[in-house]
Amino acid sequence: MNRMFRQWRALFSIYFQDGIAYKASGLIWVLTDVATAVTMPLVWAAASAGGAIQGFDQRAFVLYYLTMLLISCFVTCHYMWEIAWEIKEGIFSTYLVRPIGYMQLMFVRNFAWRIVRTMIFLPLFLLLIWAYGGYLGGQSLYLGWETWVAILLGHTLSFSFVMALGMLALFVQEATAIFELYYVPMLFLSGQLFPIALLPDWARNLAALFPFYYTTGFPTEVAIGRIGSTDALQGIGLQVAWIGGSLVLQRVLWAHGLRHYTGVGM
Image (tube, rainbow, N blue to C red; front, side):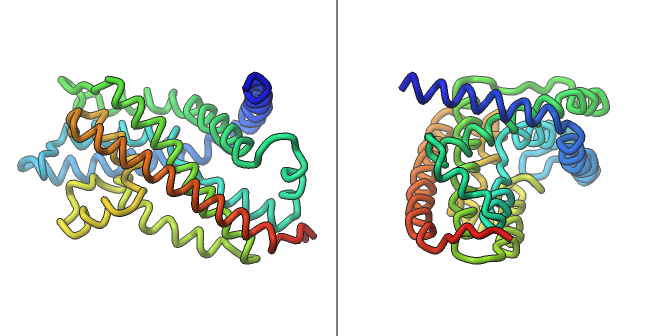
């Protein structure tokens, strides 16, 4: 156990420094997310000027999007693109001979990058709070243990599901088209484009059947106080179940995919 933690600490230090070294690229990715945070609260604030929509008034919409943006910076994983590229180029072979499991290495790698990305985003987040200060008066977040657990599990769920998705690159040469399709249900059912409560009943039921909502939408609604303790515990249980299912799927695809992998590079 001590050896494993020493490996994790060393890897975290390496990838954290790597993220700091490429701050410009991280800032570009953050700015693409900020564009949504700037526009969507204004759209829904204008739409709800005449009254609340599904329990969201102007202030609640702004609080939701700002909280969602901060949480998604830490939670949302996109590592399937790197996995596919490294498999295609043969770089993946170097991970197979290292004295640490591939899943562990990628988890620490992703965690380090998420920390760096959140740090890069914080100054912009403070600027957004100042810009939307008029809407945030009297608003508060719930920062109980349920919120922190939901965020950490959301991070783990996003990572484990994306890792399972990334394993498809072991079977097909060009997996990027599959990854593009992933963003269609992810954006609509995760709550990142708009709160799940605004969807029709059939869409809300559909969101409950997929893991996307439990990555970002669920932690956000816990944080802003729309989900009570009892429902939060149920949601946390579903997060754990989806993490377990994603890990099993990843291991199955890993075991079968390695038989197809040749590692010749391009």
